[in-house]
Image (cartoon, rainbow, N blue to C red; front, side):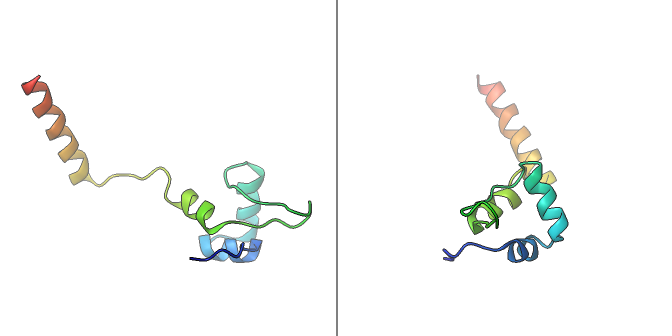
Length: 77
């Protein structure tokens, strides 16, 4: 597990985006960051992963399975 904070450059590389896009996400408050000295910003790998893995879109088979379960529960209830 990595505990060292990531620089802006490292965070942008990790997300595979430009530094400009990273700063846009920060200014729009869509990405968490740390600013310990009031100048440079740093990022937590956990925060970056949370950002990447939010709003998961399920595959078709997962949606079909959910509908099947809901229909079965309706018939039983």
